[in-house]
Length: 442
Image (cartoon, rainbow, N blue to C red; front, top):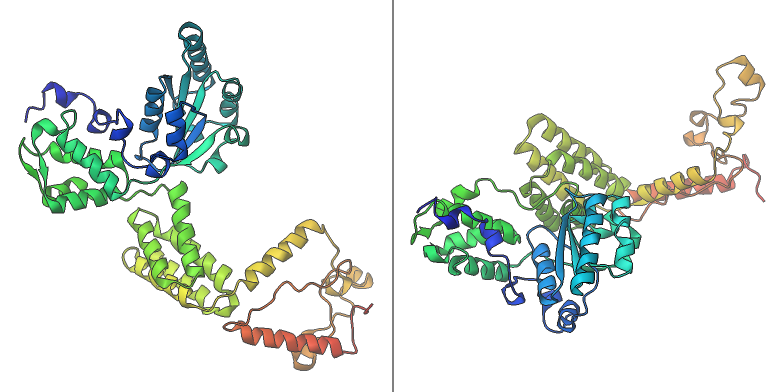
């Protein structure tokens, strides 16, 4: 293989194979198949401002270029990483020039548009509204979190999905067969290598082509790329997992919901997915502790201790012992009795504390460390529970005088909270029957 041949020093394989027509475009049939809204808009030439939201390597930029091509529009591209308001104004001037001199409409494509701040996003709005250009943005992040409402209301959001095996295979075959790909080198892939490559791509077309190109650089023309070579090329390639990004929150959400839904198998799967993608096990351990309090609570108080133990194992022993301990805790949570009574009660109490202001502590509940405080009535008539029958001061009141007593904690009829609920009901009965009522009944 001649590394100094002209083709070897041109664009990367992924760039050379960029689709030049919709027939060459891989995937996204849910928006591009005949009869689908975007395909109809393309056919009618009725393009509109839009946002492409999807993971890396699924064809967001390529689709924008194709839309410009089929609509005979001037294509202007900006990267939000390297551009600012100055570049936006230059793009506006370029679009106006195209309209004035050539009566040609323009498409302004902004890659990673979520990286623009509010003022930069606002700079688009007047020109989107007056038709200076058709705006197309690409983002890997949830637009509802990252983009201004004003911009969202003027652009239709299309969700682009990870490429399935059929779309990846289509792309792989093009790369091996087409002249502008690797077709002139007559390379082949073993069945095992093909399967491994599709798995490693993880729905990312760009990753697929980059991995194939790396492997192709290590063989002579006419040779086969086998599984062993591909394993060496892959190394320890992580799955798609962007901490702080959409995939990150989707997967931790799936793990939490699997635990809450009492699915140990689903929980283990999402836990393994996160580890496979490179997530820090200590982060997962912290979230698992949260799950123990939020979704199991006092229905099984052992859950919290088990999760804390797993966290400590991870901190002390590291991998793989710590990861296994976290898996044990996750399975325990999924199988445990469920209660969100503490979580719901805590949130209700916080809401009252926030909304009702700084209500005074009743005198009988105040501490009285000085004689002056005692003279002012601090701690007066406080009933020490341990001196009361069964260590319970029936009829006592522990809320500010300005509000009625609340019932924040309402145990569910599951697990240990069955017993807790029975006890609280018994205590309420004693309160109702007690002759010593702190708060007079209306």
